[in-house]
Length: 88
Image (cartoon, rainbow, N blue to C red; front, side, top):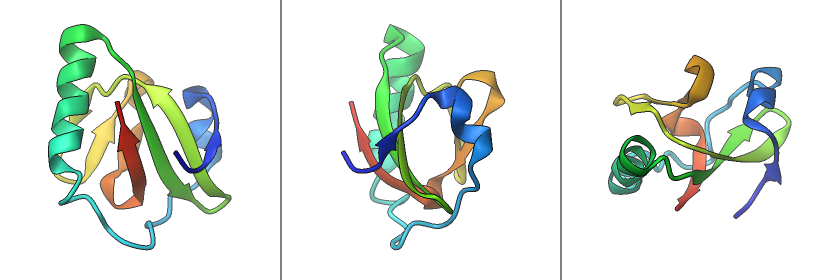
C-alpha cells in the first residue's frame, strides 16, 4: 500500500485532492466489499487516498457508501475520486 499510515482521527487535518486517475468506477466492487466487511463483520479495510500533503493511508471500517463518498467513523467522508488503493 502506498501512503503514510495515519490514524483516522487525523484525517480532518488534511485536505483531500483528486487522485491522478479517478478509479472510483473500478473500485466499485472493492468498495461494496469493504462496506459489507465493515457492517457485517466489523473487519477493517486499508484505504490510501490523495491529500495536499501527499498520499495518506488508514486502517478502518467502512460505515457507508454513496456514489461520491465513503463514510468512516465519526461521520468522516472520503471522496471516492481521492482514493488511490483499497485492500482488505
